[in-house]
Amino acid sequence: MTNTKISLETNTRWLIKLITSETFIYVIKRLLQALLTIFLASALAFFAMKFSPGDYVDTLRQNPKISPERIEEIRQQFGLDKSWPEQFRFWLQQILTKGDFGTSFVYQRSVSSLLWERVPATLLLAIASLIITWAIAIPLGILAAVKQNRRTDQILQIVSYAGQGIPSFITVLFLLFFAQLTTPLFPVGNMTSIDHAELTWLGKILDIAWHSVLPLIALSITSFAGLQRIMRGQLLDVLRQDYIQTARAKGLPENRVIYVHALRNAINPLITLLGFELAGLLGGAFITENFFNWPGLGKLTLQAVLAKDQYLVMASLVMSAVLLIVGNLIADLILKAADPRIKLEDLN
Image (cartoon, rainbow, N blue to C red; front, side, top):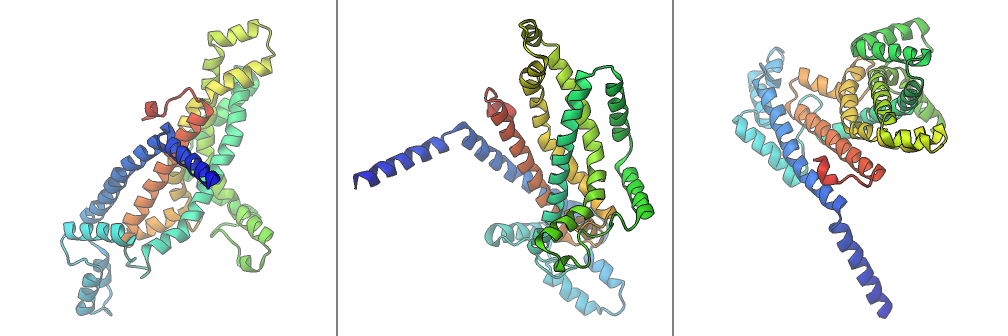
């Protein structure tokens, strides 16, 4: 009985400490702010669809095989006969009470199921690109700063300027042309081969990885170029600080000065950019997915916009907003973990 009481008191103290911690309060505050952001994103998507000419039913009227009576039934089925405020209020009510984002006009399926099928493919591209970009750009940025104004630095600057100067769609078109020249070396279209289901688990992973090579290159080039330049500039600024000169005067090894003292402070602004980096990658993924026929959220959203699939467009944009909010929140928490001196309340 005594042991149980002690255990209960310990758990209670731990729970109270968690709830009153700075991190927990900050996360709750950001989530509450996110609700307003998501609401505004959904309202913007709804009214953007409504103010655009025509709707899904108008496309059906072009088919002479569909009678006017059937078209009216479809309007009533999807609630398109109601006023705009009533449609938006009903959509929000369905989400809050049932977690139902509506039914896709085109696919005649639950919007939620369509999103859960496509989001993993988009996240795979975005997160893999983020990892690859950071793994390459950070070391090269450090190298450029250490070799400032030397040939290595000059070459890296040319590469970064070229990477940022070339539009994403030009890079994608070049990669598609390259894939055509080297066919069937680099597969283009979808994220798996025809015989994917017959492969072993390792073969399935390698199959997806091989299909993602060109989309990842297209998605990573611009991000890599910008991140490498930022890393170079931040490290050069830190290396000019007085405490770095003091560390060198004390006789500390140059590697220790750079990789322990300077890099730790230079990396913080880049962590802050992590959330915005994810936002940029998600935006770039929309372009990349459509060119490479990658079955992700971007391609689904574009198809829904063209077909005036109202509920699917709204839910897709809401999902994108959620991913961006989560990305920025994770970036803030990583920044706090990397530098405990930073107060989360100052990041708002």
